[in-house]
Image 1 (cartoon, protein in one colour):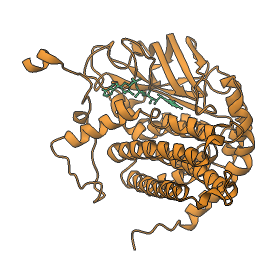
Image 2 (tube, protein in one colour):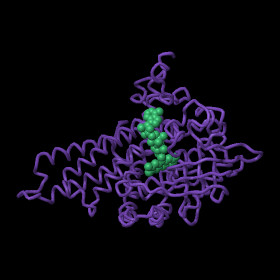
Image 3 (cartoon, protein in one colour):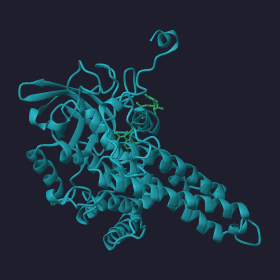
Image 4 (cartoon, protein in one colour):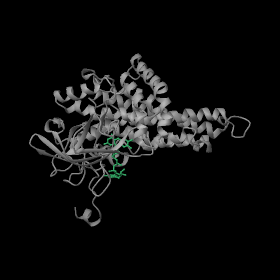
Length: 445
Ligand SMILES: Cc1cc2nc3c(=O)[nH]c(=O)nc-3n(C[C@H](O)[C@H](O)[C@H](O)COP(=O)(O)OP(=O)(O)OC[C@H]3O[C@@H](n4cnc5c(N)ncnc54)[C@H](O)[C@@H]3O)c2cc1C
C-alpha cells in the first residue's frame, strides 16, 4: 500500500488553507498589481496579502518547527504552492525565495546563525519579514550565472568578491535578478544570503561561499528590474561597493562550497517550479474548458463539441496530471533524502516547465483570437509560463548541465531514482560543459 495518491488529512488541510488564501486573499489583488507599470509599486500592492500569508504560516512554512517555521514537508509545500501558483506564481516565488535564503542557513549555519536569522524571520510581529537569495549575476563579458562552477579563477564565473579584512569581509561587485533582496521599499530585505567569491585565485568549485548581508549595510544599493512575467515578485540588481560585513556572517559550512549550495538550492526548488508550471497550466486549462463549454464560435453548439477542441484539452489535462505526479515524486525524494535532489529536482523542473509552456499556448489556440484580449487572463498565463524554463537556474545552462554531470559520473546508477536510492551530488559532477574546446585546440587535447 506504499504508492497511494490520496492526500492525507494533514496534506488536505494544507491544500485547503492554501486554496482559501489564494482565492480569497491573493486573487483580489493580482489583477491590478500585475497591471501596475512600476514594478516596485506592483510588488508593494501584494504586501497586505504577504502579511496575511505570514499570519497563516505560509510565508515561512518551509522552515523547520524547531526555529519557528511551519515544518511543512516538501510534499506539503508543493501542494500549497500549486494552489497559490494557479492564482499568481510571482507571489509564490517571493515565498519560495524565503526558503532559498534561509534553508541553507539551516543546512550549513552555526547554531547561533540559525537562531539569529531563522528565529528573526519567524517571529516578526509585523509579518513583513522577507529574505533574499542572491546567486545570479549580470550579463556581460565576463558575466552571467550559468557557469558559476567553471574551474577557472576570477573573473570567470561568480564575480562578486568578498575579501577578508580582519574581522570583516569586504564585498564588491554586482548581482542581477535575485528576488526579494531589495525588500518592500527597495532599501534591502531584512536579510540576504549572497553567494560570493571568497577566494579569487580559485575556480568555482573551490572559491565560493555564502554570506549574510543585513538590511542597512553601508555600501549596498538595490534597483528593481522591470520583467515581463512574474511581475509580483521583485527581481533586483544589487551593487556592492566596499560593503563591510562581520566575518561571522559567513555561513561556515559553505566556506569553499558555495557551488554545492547553488546546486542544492536550485534542486530543492525544482519541484516547486515544476508545480508552479502545473498551477498556471491548470488555471489556463480550466479557463479554456469553461470557454469551450460556453461559447459557440458561430456554430450551433458550444466549441467543446468540435473534435480538435476535445482532443487538445484532453491532452493538456493528461500532461497536467503527469507533471503533478512527477512533482510529488521529486518532492517525496527530497523529503526522504535530507533535502537533496540535485538530479531529480533538475529533471523535474526542466520536464514540467517545458511540457506545460506548450500546454498553456494550446489552451490559447483552443480559445482562439479572444485569448489575445487582455481582459481575459490567457496572456498573463502565457507570460508567467514563459518565465518557468528560464528562471530558478535556467533549464539550459544550469539544470540540464547538472543532470548531464550526474549521468556522466562513473558510478551513476540509472535505476537510482526508480529505486529511491540516494544520489550523492559531488564536486566531480560539476563543471561539465563550462569550458568549451573548439577546433584544433580540442584535437590537441
Ligand atoms: C522570476 C525570477 C526569479 C528569480 N529569482 C532569483 C533569485 O531569487 N536568486 C537568484 O540568484 N537568481 C534568481 N533569478 C535568476 C535565475 O535563477 C536564472 O535562472 C539564473 O540567473 C541563470 O540564468 P541563465 O541560465 O539564463 O544564465 P546565464 O549565465 O545568463 O546564461 C544564459 C544562457 O547561456 C547558455 N549557456 C551558458 N552557459 C552554458 C553552458 N555551460 N552550457 C549550456 N548552455 C549555456 C544557456 O542558453 C543560458 O540560458 C530569478 C529569475 C527570475 C526571472
